[in-house]
Length: 350
Image (cartoon, rainbow, N blue to C red; front, side, top):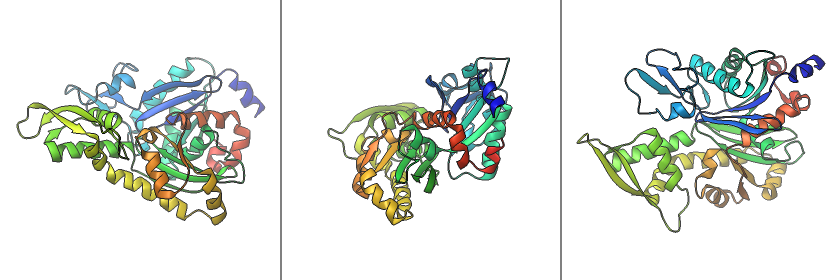
C-alpha cells in the first residue's frame, strides 16, 4: 500500500463515468477534466480508429449519421455495457492518455462507475478493457453509489439516501445506507429509449425519418414529463419516408411528452418497485430525506415534479446532475482505503 501511494505521486489517478452516451473523467483537485461523447469513428468493416484521437468523442459524434460508405461512427457501449471490446479499449486509451498526458512513467489507478445490474462477465470486460487501455489498477463502483457520494448524500450514515440516476443506456434506482446499497433496480430504459420514442413518433405521425442527433435535440429543446406553461414548438427537418425527399415539420411539446410516456412510465415503475423493496425503517427516513435525481435524464423538464407527485417524497435534481457519478468516482478514489471494504473480492486484488 505504501509503495502504491508512492507510485501515485507520479501518476494522474482518475475516476471515470463510462457512459453509453457520454464519458466523463474526474481528477482529484481538478474536478471534471474531460466530458466527451462515447463515440468512435472507425474504418467500416474493421475496428481501426481513424486518425487516432481525431475521431473519438466530439469529433466522432459530429459524424453520426453523416459518414460516407468507408467510415462508420459507432457507440461501443450499449445499455451501459461494452458491446464492442476493441473499440471501447481504443476509446478508453485515448481518454486516459488525454488526461494522464504521459507516455512514460507509472500508469494511473482508475475507478470506473458501472451499472448496478451488470453481470460478473460484463464487469470483467470493463476491467480488462481499462487495463489494456493503460490503467495500473482498476476499481469498479456501482453508479448509484458513486452518484450518492458525488452529490454529497450521507451515504455512510445509518439513514436512507435514495438516488435516481438516468443515463443514456440505463436507469439506476437505489437506496443507500451505511456506505452500501440496500436495495436497487437497474433497467435498460433511459435517454436512448427516449430518443428512440421520439424517432418512432416522427415516423408514425409525420412520415418523417430523423437521425439520432435530431431526436436528442428535440428531447432537450421541447421534451417534458409534465405540462408546460407555455407549451413549446420546434421545427424539425428530416427525410420524407414516402417521397424520399428532405422535408420539415413543426412539432410541439405536448405530442413529444406523449411520445415519452412509455419510457417515463418504465422509470416510474422502477422507482416504485425499489420503494416497495425498502425496509420500513429506511422508508420512514425517505419521508424526510426524499430522493435525488442525477444523470442527463434528470434534466428532462418536469420529471422531478412527476416523481414527487407519484411517490409523495421530496424530490430534487442534483446541482450538477451530469457530473454527479464522475465526481463520486473521484471522491471514492480519495478515500480508497475506507471504501475498499465495500468492494467485491476481485476488485480488492485488482
